[in-house]
Length: 114
Length: 114
Image (cartoon, rainbow over all chains, first blue to last red; front, side, top):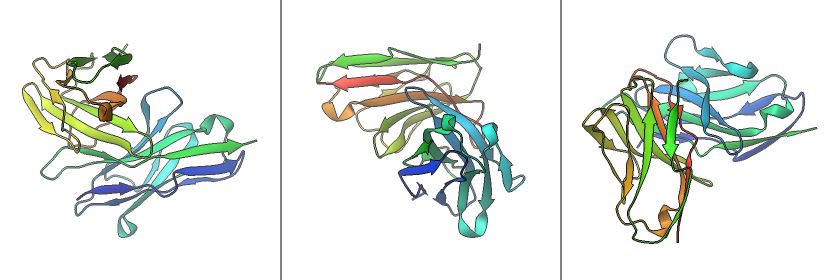
């Protein structure tokens, strides 16, 4: 079965430090990949997406992610964390072979320390 | 304003009392979907719809029904709610499925089943 794994349900970083949130997927066919962010008491909004163009994808708020097919990974990074980045982050895949499901990871809650 | 709306935003009900959560989008999107969000489990897809009168099961469809009679609306029906359906529900829409389309999420409906 297709799956998305996010390592680390909680990640803490200091303000100004590198943010690295990990996502691995399992799929025999490279899917479309997404990162969404959820701020407290809100819905989800798109940070960035990979759709088989450039492997390094830039998103909003200084985030970027790199698609690595050999590692089946799509890790999210930001060079310098800001307090406003504190939120929950979800990696997701859109399946394209035989089904049109979306599968989300279990989420990583990012805490930014002053 | 382009948006996905859900009603009600909060609902407390009792076991076995049928309820409907409405979802509407004004973006002329073909793809619509329902998710439930539970702590530690991320978002899990309940049902999705590729277009009017075309629906399919997600990963957790048991206990739920949907219908898509109009392109803009995609209600979620719980015929006989049970306490294990207490959750935060999100409706989402996307222009197309299977081509890496971004999903736009509603604000969520928090359901409590006593």
